[in-house]
Length: 477
Image (cartoon, rainbow, N blue to C red):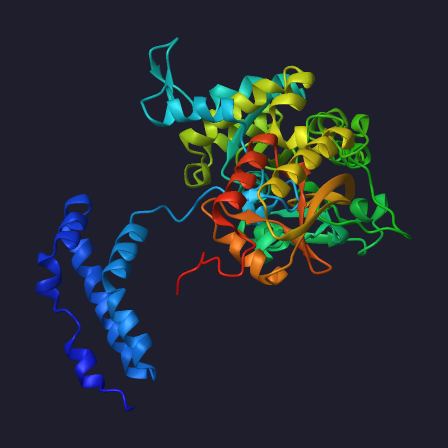
């Protein structure tokens, strides 16, 4: 039978009729007239377009019957935040796409208290006058690193630009060719340096740079020597580089400052916990670097920030630089940095209370216990799937310790009624999306990045959604 599309079009309710219906009136009371009206118009346009291309009358009638539900869903979606919690079961601790370093719950409560009221962000309670937003964490950074002064901007690329703009603008900054790295999102260190107004002078080769290369490159135009710690990759084999101490000695002999971009920024010697040694900020300063910059949301385990520490004479100039206003941190970051840095006053507390450090140093035995518990919970949901434990390896991520692999334990799931790809998609559309890895046609949930609380949430979602059943409908078109 040929579809009568004109009849279908005439059966679509008019805008003014829909606006008078009780269900739509409820939406208007809960949200706003304009939002509901716009949603009605969009859904009516989409419905007419669908009917225009549809070849099945039954499907067209069904779509017309769904109109009010679709309007409600569109209105509610407009008022639902797009950014939401996800469960990171990838085993990548600093997962850039999933927000890098998570903040501890106790820390977040303090930040929330600051955010929901007024604070002394730039007000000195002692002096009763305008203060400095760096004052809340500058003394902590100096105490922890041995620096004379400190400040922070919104990320480490901004920190590099501010440092070079302050110390190298209009002159030359010498750096090894092997340290001109590309960071996330195709941002490259030489491009950031160029924006600073300093002229980049490359020395050495990709794999080898000698002391004499730096020495020969210094001219009357040289403003500083720069070392960039290649935290997001490693060159192995026939390599040579110049240490911070050697570069600092050369710079100071020539009356120049020595700058180090240490990248990930770590305040704890990770080699004590079975991980690869990563140069600490303290070591860089002890070895003679005049200014060191690093990220706040990588190995430090704090909020996104570019932290700058070093000699007071240089930090003071940066604070007065006009760029600082454009790059400055907000009250959320200042509050988060303070509470995270306070944890480092006790290394034991830092390892316990900073999620990134806790995940990196947690024993395989404890991870395995949690994985076994999650496996039992998932099996108890009655999911029609093969669920097992499997040894795996976690990684640091976020451009930090690229060669490091940490022994871990995962729960693996291979569904019986649906494909692994379908299960992976359904997991992404749960109320709290679950992001895992797909390996050898099974889902792998690395428990190192899933604490006990999130394991319970994960299992509860599986039980309530009946996620492995063939007829489960989690995604609406």
